[in-house]
Length: 138
Image 1: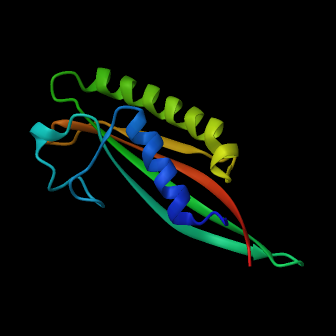
Image 2: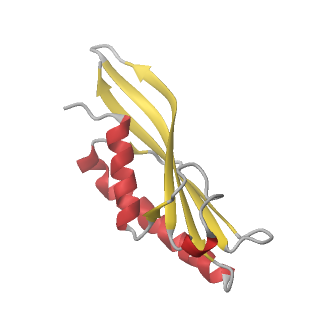
């Protein structure tokens, strides 16, 4: 069976949830998520960066999967920030370990950032961009 982006996205979401994160109530933003429920929540978003076709009918798709993580940080934002860096490392390692079973490849240019809370926000947000390569038969 050919691996498709929805299958890979589901695997990545499952790996994130396995790390102890719950899915955000609003899929593309944390804005409507109440502060009191922002304890270790995530959202996973993918975008197609491009593809290449090969002789013989194979196609290589390049995706960027952004995993957003949020953690309470009003009392000690620096501790939450450090914890999110550990979560990013753990998630990246889990994706790298899963890529063979998941029939995709994790690229080398993984980018991550952790933002301290702004005015009035009680949570710290992290974003990790995972470059995913997916081979498909046409």
